[in-house]
Length: 232
Image: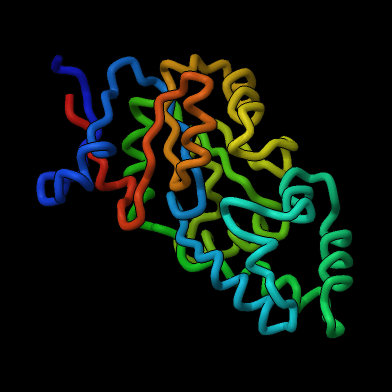
């Protein structure tokens, strides 16, 4: 109908079964975009943290920690219900060998790879025409490490300046995919769900946003936000 659309530059090269479901997003009436952080704007690998903890002697860490399912310990950390000290003490209790806070911190942060510096010009461009927000499941340990990596990779002080407001789960006390997390952002920022696009790499988080009528885009592995072109 002539309205703006998102379309990756390479969509026409992809198999129909791969591109058909995700790669055309009607941007009509979209005024706001909420971005996830991990594997949307910065590369992370959960297996790196799982491997690091198992090297420290904590067996079956994978059964406790994954992007799709976490033990209460990790969920409580990511909703600010427990302190960093509580987290370190809890990890020490499930370990068969004595561990220092530093060892635990390094293993916990092992999932971080690099920030996608090529995505920053896209954020700058989109902020001219849309209201940008960030909604991330995280914790104070990861947040401190991420800020360090962001400055290391970009030379800039903070990613937060690219958004009208950032929402970190440990600070708002809510996690995706719980609908309360999205509802909190909509209410706090005074956004209409039908005018808002949410971009995340996990289907479960996408489904949570859809329940409130938020428009969504599931960012697939290998897909980058800066490859999403706006067509007027």
